[in-house]
Image (cartoon, rainbow, N blue to C red; front, side):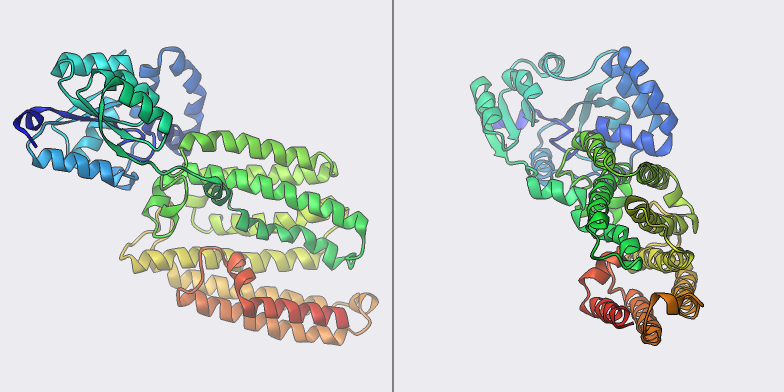
Length: 475
């Protein structure tokens, strides 16, 4: 590095450059999580200017700076410049109330230029301020967006953080590009992962009333059940996207969830804001072809999951009861779609077995927290001292579910439904084995966060399902 370069400031953009996300967009979802009623003020704030909007949002939210997904190549570039004695400046359109704490946390910057007062420091405004501070062609600038073109035109050299060939070409037409740092581009697989299509496996529960009513050969039953499956899947994906957006910080502290597309910064947060209404619209458009009772259950499911994502997931015990209820709502929805009223026995069994599964989910998450030497599960109300209680309640719920099934076999109406009901008495031992084994594997840390998905991938679990189906067929 020559003596001239050693004195040239390196100015680094924040959103999409230093960090793989956007502080403004994340601020909106933090506000949704902690003070959703304030979202009504967003249009009023925006009418007073983007700088005013950023200021109000910055005053209303608090970031955990340690969780933000950093672009490590940009961090390394800033660190090298600082070690070489060059001034390093954070020059960002984010508000000063957010930019300065981030800069202090990273300890890489000598100065911060950010949005403040009525000035939204973006594009030509940023170019003018940097030129006034350091002189035309008196600084190098690291950016990632077309809005940075006016800044690059005033800079001595540009570092482009992008894989967009058109942007790189445009930057080279304005100044010398000293380096290109490729950015990760989300492909179709990333969006499919964000929709969590594997979680659609839970929606096979909408077929349970059809199976329980012995109408497997009824085309009139399968068509609405399949539409119900699709509708619930789309609605669930919308909720998963919303949940990921309001739970970004907690996910980034999690050993596995931090790799999710939104938490890692692979998919921009604002893409999720468009995905949610699109998925919901498709879900209710599909439900339009089904009975109004199904639409009511679907709407109830969405409202319950919304309440869960925004508040109830942080309430001890309420959260697992809500999860169990959401599983059971799928069964109720299947009945509404096929015009089959689920029996008392089916609903009672569902509630207890799904409560056990919900507690498995929470127990496995808390066990990971213990293994990370932490005391509290991020974003939840549980501590590691709750592990024995969760196991006690979870195993008890599973055993009660088996008891409900045994009582169902013993009820007087069974001989009218089955020709050989004695075969059904072989099912409870299979269920006892499955529940006991599931909790044993959960205690060993061998079950992922979602027990139903685990069960559908586990050959022994599927063997239990297959044997139970055979016993029902024989009976």
